[in-house]
Image (tube, one colour):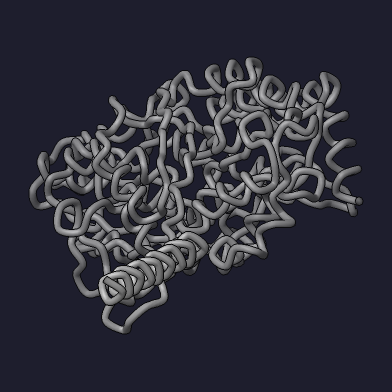
Length: 516
């Protein structure tokens, strides 16, 4: 009996000890950090797993330059690469400014709000000054990739000396000459070295039957109703006209007050009077301008040299033997080289305080844009999916032959990539057309002689309110002078009218900002 009792007590003790050990192990496990291995035998230990960070939710609003919003194919890949959950709000570019203003008024702008262009940025500066957007300058140094953005271009987007935006980069100076090289070769003409050579080529293309059909059916220059992105501003910059504004006697003055502006009108007038261009260019759309070149009627196109691919593609459909080339670095009467430059961006993105409530949220949004400036993300957004939308050849991107697929799926995202190839590391384009290869080479050289607009980083309330309307006075007078309906005195009278109706105030305000 005693032996049986002793065995029973021993069993109870063993069970008690086992229960205590189990309880201690359970307590130890409950006190271990998440993901930490429970202490025990070597065979039961497991390596720790990193805690996965939750995706950052960001809504992006931007203009749509295609006929319809893209499918989610590219967006899904961007989310994987950046650990984000993205909502893209695409709105047609034609009505985008109206949507921006409505969203601003109703307090419904999202975390990342793209504007439409430089003009929209100028109009938005009032809201920026009212404190409706985050100043991001103090944070950029915390993000290694955003820190690569070009200081000169960032400077052009400052508002009262402060940084509120990130920019979508564009080459500073893409403007130059696209011409029919086969016509020039037939007539024994070299690529123009001077403005006088351009005029001579335009006249020769008109009068010397460059297409060899024996008919007077060709013209030299094709132009359109655009004094900036048409032929006029580029030709004027070659002649030495300031870019928008220039300095004279220590004061900033608008370009049309300089003698080089009148000299530029004289050159276009000479070409027009010789019937060496479309005489109704002031009423010609870009579509019609392009058709004159691609139909084989005109042989000179002054504008963005990167247009050469599309111009050549449509030209050879109509004239299979045609050969085009590009040229720039054209000297003016003073023998010097110059070309006008854009501010280095075509759009910006802002960060509304109505959507981003505090600094912590802002840094999460900026972190997304920092990742956008890595090669993987930039290539995804600009070129698409490798093997589907493009392939890599010799370290450059060769776009797929399925242009419609790329236009539909990639183009809407391409328009929002921050920075440029030399700051975000994305592939350069592989160009097969020799004229396009030359264009890219000239664009690099153009940067060395590019003339900036000194008012790009400056502000004038009068310019924002009245500048666009007042510019119509100058545009109208420019066309009238070239058409011969007013003379130099008539043009100068229009300039005085511009000054009296608000131009003097614009000059005053820009100079006040310039001298700060």
